[in-house]
Amino acid sequence: MNTTKTTKEVRAELKARIKAHTQKSRQLREQKNQAKADGDTDTVNALHWERIDELRPEARAMFLAYGYLKGRTYRQVEPKTRDGNEPDDLGYQYLYEWEGDDDADIRAWIEAETQTRFELEAEKKAIQEGAREAAGASAPTPLPQAPPDKPKGLLGRLRAAVGA
Image 1 (cartoon, helix red, strand yellow):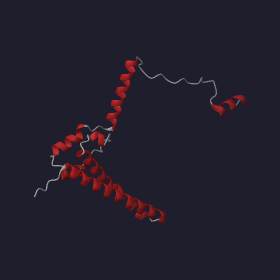
Image 2 (cartoon, one colour):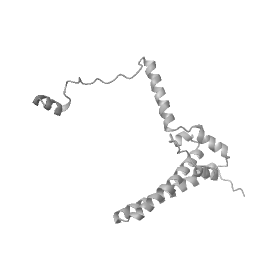
Image 3 (tube, helix red, strand yellow):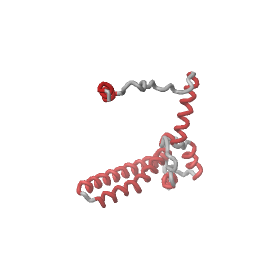
Image 4 (cartoon, one colour):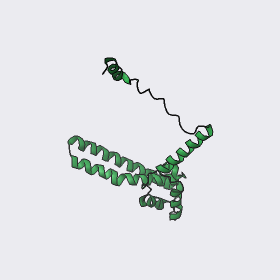
């Protein structure tokens, strides 16, 4: 008997787990809101940290695995990451569970298109500067400023009228 699953079966199984995970998260949120209404701060804190520490990283890992199995690039799944927020071993664990690829393939998929927020901002700035140079402008022109002797706003005009 062949026990290997097709990619379609694996994706369906992962999608079912994602849906169950989402339902659990919703239930925790409802319990938290009920505990908040009851004034039970200990329960509120416990439920909050269960969602943050346990469910959120697991959800991210499942979505990474699902995107990988669907043939999406890493950048399509997570357009940008912050420094120090790269996928951890939990994300790799889900990928290994369903995909027979070795460690190098999965890490290469993630690292090939990983760009931090700072790298994206630097790339965007370089593109904007290149467009300015192509248009012939060296720097953005500053907005015109009001003359220093002219009062600004209603309060300034009132003070000038009174002579204060």
